[in-house]
Image 1: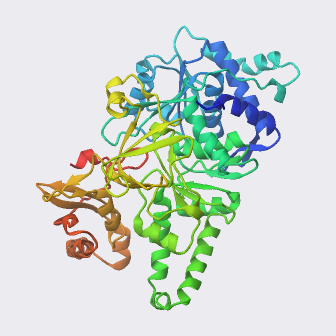
Image 2: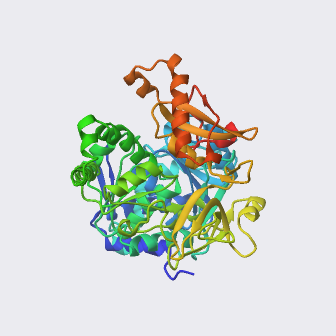
Image 3: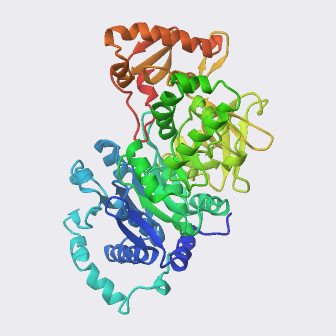
Length: 552
């Protein structure tokens, strides 16, 4: 059990960092200090109190990343209630189901999402409040929330007659093992489960992030991942605000052009991203550059290649603002070709491993100690890891973890909880991998997606897809088993086809060449027999993972 307490960490952070910038809205060009932030939290605490919200009650939250979103999240947990963040990309039916399943009593929503919900069928919601302007969206007939909102400023000034200052910051006393958050998974297997996250689960992530120096007082962070997802929530919001960092919320889709502009303005000290960001930069910017005649020739000449790689590294570092310690890649499998190139040019990146069920971090290694194709070392003193295999260092088996970050279980779903947490307390991740003697994790793929060849070899389709996705005319792919044969479903890269003058009629011939090239790169038992072209992008979860179950 950790001696630190999540709520008390924030109480101390607001007091110690009172005059420092806490939250900025990139689009509105506005900034809240920690003192401003604490006052806004205190206003919400007063509203919760007037509404009769008790410790342990659930409050749902859905909308894009804004200072109001962050304020509702922090106000809820520091009050002692349970926050239920919902990805704004969930379809309305799923969002409505999550709100009901979580038993939330209050809902904070952006107006655009609110318009897609049916208030009459939100069973436990007593009132809904807009994240855009903090005004009432709806309330049940016997509620007075509209009155409380209208009089909130007057009531706040009455309670704090001399103003609200750092000595007024006092938050709930909640034990670390109490429920603090219910985070619903994205549903790659067809349905969402409510992950019950405790104060200790969050605290384990905070302590590691602060003690490792990832977040520190005065450091700058650009938040562009969804905060309703565990990865962005922990290291783009919770950890920085616990350390006294300054978080700038991008609040828009992070296209490479928008992201590079924002990076150069904010100049973050740490970059948290998903593999897709670096993979797009590699395929759209780097590959065309190093494939040109003269440069391609120069890269084959000893000594010249190092100078060229140094220039590429310099440009990449400048693209990310130029002042970061490292780029942490997580949230999905990283393309091996991209990883190898970035490692070769000595770009300061590392790969971490986690899952919603661990709030989310399981392993991480600073970039200078990073081992290629690994997912970092298991967090020392916080998490334990074992591999279900007779030879954990060489033969892949299921990765199992336990420790401070491991969840309580799934909300109102004992069967699903028993399926992943065994009698000895080990959380079965569903990921396959190996573990080196020093605790470094190497991930091979998902247990549920692993295929078995006719001669008994384990096949990890993600590894084949990673190679295939780097090939010309391939946008994204999925490898499936069809009657004992491997078939690759491919959504083409129409942009590349247009640029190179390839017509739809010529595409099957090009895919035959792609198949032949791919089969030279994989083991004999991993060779695909056919490429099937799919006309539309694969259907994905809100965190952009392909819903594999739809294509089996």
